[in-house]
Image (cartoon, rainbow, N blue to C red; front, side, top):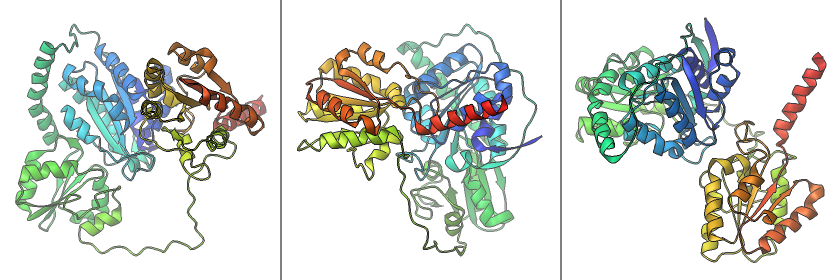
Length: 530
């Protein structure tokens, strides 16, 4: 049977059909739809597959490890910057090893469509010394889930599946197979305790497995060689294989790479038959660096580092064709009636009222800084508000505001969203409380994870209790409703808390208008059926 699926959906369905026990994730584009598909899939519901959102990527990775240790197959999903958050558990999981199959999906975002950097998750997999799968299309994304779980259990190691935005968010027909039963290997007597003496032995065992991982890549059905006339060899990784085939058709002298570590024998054979080789990969020059080391500095190796392909941004059929020496295709000019439209906060969004109030109050100070965070409210950095001085990573607003206050700066204000606060803002607030830092923290609570589409927010209805439990004085945890009619109250509360020489928290709370509208439509549809 064939189904039309996004790359994310193909991964999700492949995992369910491979006997999945649970998925653990924090929403992050372009990975979000994997977990959402599993949450809404009838078979997943029937089987009781765990699919609730986690507080952050680190807790997701650790919970998946727990499921693996008791013999079930577990899936962890995150965007590339989420790998930074999960890194402690992820890297150590390669040393502890696993029991039930554990697959970590890392969704990279070349060109930064919705991200703050272009980091390539293949480096994380190489750093941890575990295998990586990189599908070139939706069919492989589906098929690879079963292969990845099986390889994970064979090696007793986690396996990474790396995708990019174009694959995650494009659709194709996928031939689906019968679903396996939920896998349960049962409890084993092994213990996963990384005391130094045990960790040293585990690390040595991980190194001993590298030859087995390389042999698996050399024999993989996902790595294949196609021969054609010509002295230019092509190493095409993941989705880049499609761009090469679009440019050259059957005339491609190409080694397709979709399972790592890189198949060294196949690469050496390709290089032996060709005068030069070009590495075509979407993301950073991960493979190119390794191929250069493998073939030596004197070999004519081309790619992103050598300048034939752009160093930044995602690949396209056009820039790949140009790198292969083909003429550029004619394109139509941009119409003069098309005007660029920068992203904006939704009309009627509560964040707008928060920024309007902050700007009004802070304009009375000779100097100030508002330290921002990751979420749809980051758009407050743009006109018309121009309110934010920084946005670096999840949870950084509070700790950066604290650092500024430590330097004697005043007023120092942090603004953070509800989901981001529970993701990684709480520890920064605890630091501020312990130092009695002179900061004002605004937790702009729209009752959802708005930027990624309205998923549940882990701290809903708990923020006042969390802040008080962390040590903020109860009388300085203030809740307001961000509406224009309440502007006088909101500005008064902000002024009062800025005047307080310690840690204060203001929680403007109003539901995201997008989720509110969806609920209204759902209720209307339900009423119409009644």
